[in-house]
Image (cartoon, rainbow, N blue to C red; front, side, top):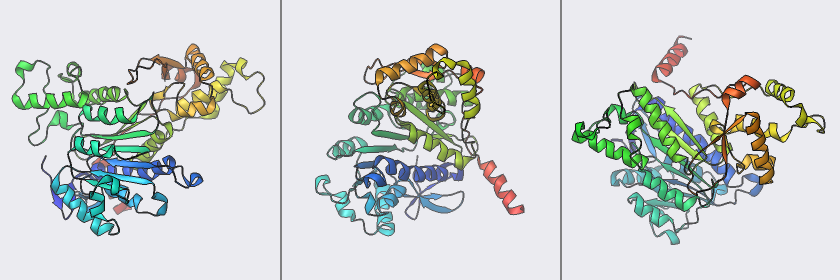
Length: 436
């Protein structure tokens, strides 16, 4: 896909795509850093890092509105240069394209002239800026940053279409050493509709898994999709004659399942830059708070309703169903079973939970007791066991909310699927504003 620039900004279309994506990222980065650095209580002293694996130029020219805005790398640099509190934040910007990299340095010189670019480009171990600029292929760059003590780290994979799964594995395997550790998060860009609509010289996926009927361009696309998933098992479910919308949903679901090898929670945020185009910004995390905050950031900008089920009504029904666990509790106390269930309903993406979840451990620190509470919820019908292959071969039991049962017994619906903001909706809203 050829790159275009307006000034130093990479030129992309999509008020409801590129710009909205940058806005969500721009809000999430400070939020993430504020928590993982320890915040004001700890004087932001914990080491943190944001690693942009496809940094581009730091600026984006949005063709739809003829406006230049900060790209994700620009938002990182804005955060880093916001004051002395970010001293322990490392910023790693990796960009393999020489043109993009050249523009990135110009943007830095113009917007953040106090950043010493030569030192940021120089040897890592003699760099005192905590800003690292790397014009290298991804594999080489990842090897170089192994010299750094990153601490809590957020990696953003932002290629033009998709990232190879082997790269996901390479980074995750070096960072996540135990069952769903919480010190690492990924953002992954996936241009979902390109796989089915094609673009420029990139052919859409064929509608059959029979290799002998593919043309050469289709074969190239299939092989690229093999690299996306890291296997060929996806083919029978996606290479079909089903409607494109169904195939897109299947692709996202299978990709989510793949990423759960390393991450407990996988949240795809859909964007609709124009017409039938759909891309996803996928948050991968093992920390409930960050996932819920990201969903809320996205919802507030796209008109999706914030999920807020009726606690009082659900609790009243729960109490009527299980009076035995309330015996001996002082007035106003909530049984641990309820606290765990409500946390899973309101804070856990797709209702996935296990005894190692960070927020559940704050409710009951003893893992054996926590597992017993989850088993009680399973026995009563609120949780279903799920089989999710994890990267560590752990036998820790995982569960997923039984939404049918919860709806029936507690009157609580699951969160509605996230819907992208369409260009038409923005156009209609602007028309209302002009006539109002």
